[in-house]
Length: 493
Image 1: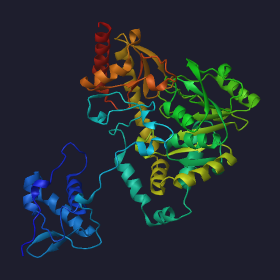
Image 2: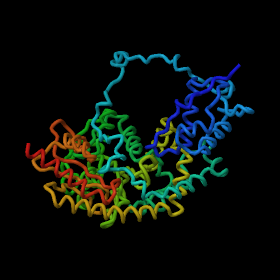
Image 3: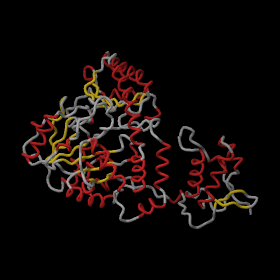
Image 4: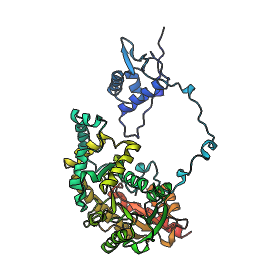
């Protein structure tokens, strides 16, 4: 009896994808096997025929098939080529057996307490990397990253000795990574700490979330900056905090506007999000004095301090805290790559012990292999070289953005004194930047409207954040020109 043959016509490749062609072929074969489109014993297209259909080298298909044989999805048969294995170990889910999902939202309407989908947040187009003028904040320029060095560190982290450490049920924070944080990262910010005062987290946002969860187990009166990082405000609301927002000026948060009875202040003192303002030394001292006098604590988000190419950043607020009032959140994601999701929380030993237990209930600990890879990348000097290269490149990009904006009616409303990777920009006549951002996508330009950073319903409409960490230097002048042209067109309406 003739074996059923799988047609080459069902295979396709995404030529715009950065994924290797061999990987795409392998994943497509696995998909049709698991979905029962290819039954046990079915013949695969010959490597020659599939290669011709896809327009790739025959060896690319042959290598993909051989890998699938090693994985147990295919097997070779004399004179028949490659066939789908008939092993019962491979689960198959026929498409026809999938049940239609329940579409009746009323089932959960009275159970869910909030509609988080509708929260204020910064939204980036999914295809922003394919657009010519991506003024996107917080994203890495992949041309600057040391890919070869990272791969080598990942290979080292998969060594037998490291793997045994990561496989242990007792594995929590990687001691190599913690040692680097204690000996290199924190001293750069003027902070001294012990191992018991540091917790590795899934990014700085996770560190702030852990702090919020610990603080809101009792009713909490909190203060946030306005404008400020929207996710911190939303997290506090979600956890039931009573929130007051305090306006930020060119010198940062104003301590004299913190209400009596406040129990926690959430702040970005060294590099305010999003304006870039630095909290003055006088205000830092006063804020810490008020924390002691009025008995409140401070959660410091110290993102992006590494991007200091104009002048050294101010010491962290935590560095001059003599009364253990400050919880400090730091991150590697901004300097390495956003998908890394590794950060740390620094605070009194008792607080970190509680945060460690809370983290354990949520996710045990950040992935050990990722921690060890990052530890090697840091310890072997790759991180320091990367920071050096990024500072040099971002200094050029910032200068280009400032120069380009100077030739327009746009106004730089805020910028970090030490450098950073973004500018806070104001449009003339308060033009709505939400509409502006939407219209600019037609020109391939991505900006971040300022509205999500403001609290309350009456929000200023004329601000936007202009990031330059992911846009090539040569694209900046034309990108700014397109923004200015669209603004001018709206003024004339």
